[in-house]
Length: 306
Image (cartoon, rainbow, N blue to C red):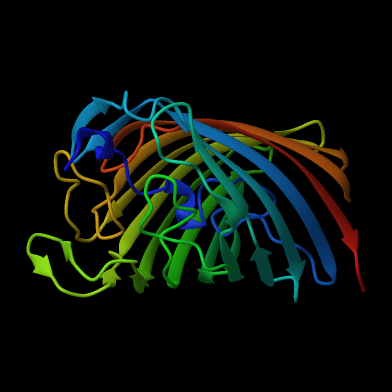
């Protein structure tokens, strides 16, 4: 195959999980009180100039610098004080500075999530909290998943189950850890043959299941108006193949990465209302994907609905 097709694969935000940090998300230690709603809109811009073909890092001069932009609206609501729902629907746009392949844009995946607090106990000079989260996402538009790295997402349904433990001191600092298993389905390609450690004469591709883990440390300031946090995130597919030399990536690839992130959120009032957030993240290791770095800016508005 022509050298111009040696391009990178799986978009890391196809997870629908750890790319955005807003109050609250499926991975944090926050809960909305019963009857309260939080509406959030976040813009994210991420890019890479190098990618991992398997575990080998390459510079991709064929398409130049790859850029991915996302506008993420999200609604979070308190069904009860201990059970919350989360709904998200991102709009994604991809582009590159060189080559002959064009980027795409459109609605990605509808994300639905239920989050429950199952532990809330005073321990020492702080509080121990435990949460569980069940999530489901599905493609919300008829995008082509086998057009990587420009594809909007991986084009398959995903079921996730997550556990979260957080210990927060009375004076503000906290430590949190979470672990999730993500079960993915299949996606349809616009070809009837592909290679995945063997020949497959079908247009149906299995998207590998994955595990997602995160450790975060942070603190509240200014009477809980300002939250500052740092995270270390790891993501591993349970199986899959590597991008072959001189070939395109595909949804069957085994995608792994490790990422660091800094995040800050400011509430103008301590009991709700308008809030602003900003974050920066960088992938420092990976497999079969681009070495993304990116930033995000957003607004939140929290109010009592009933």
